Length: 249
Image (cartoon, rainbow, N blue to C red; front, side, top):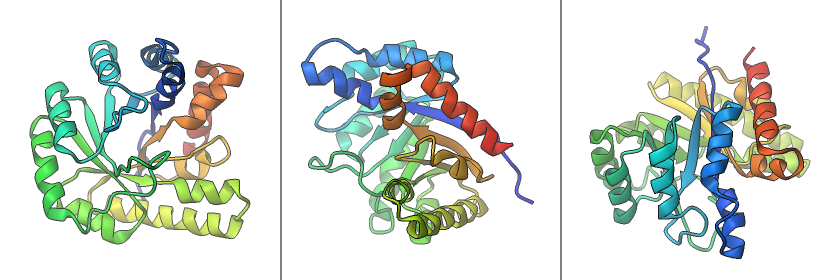
């Protein structure tokens, strides 16, 4: 029987910064959102510093590192610039994600199998600095095996295809994606990897993923920031936390 681990919730605050940047003002403040998320029961805060700085800024990362009492998960592309920033701050965690300037959001997982040598050398200094390194990948055995070979202790499985299929009413495809995620969570765990998941999760889709006993952490952002418009950020996060806990029971 697979051991069931406590399930952590990481709240991504990127799109608080998106709203702020739409007017070029100082509000809404991502740091304030992060503190509210802490109070609502988030176990960590996720922020993606993109190369084009479209939402989170360097100043946001500075403020988060100075103020947070929960861990910061620093999402970043595998570039020299981002590596230098991560090494300067030494956040609790760094999550390596694919990044294209023309995309609206992260589309798909990182292609680890084709870039094993480069990524192995890229993550080594981060691990040496004490950062927990995770790799954002599709639920694909080739990518999981490659992440394991390069020495990444953590993977984050991309749940976007599952969530999109549910939203669009493609239920057979949704169920197939969910089964793939279930199998790959178990496979990654069997290799000794810590398993996280995220992208596109909502109140309607979170419980089946949260029920996977191998999954240790879910990272959720855009949906929670959207729900905050209608019910407030703290209630939105508390409801998500409740659904996760119910699934784990």
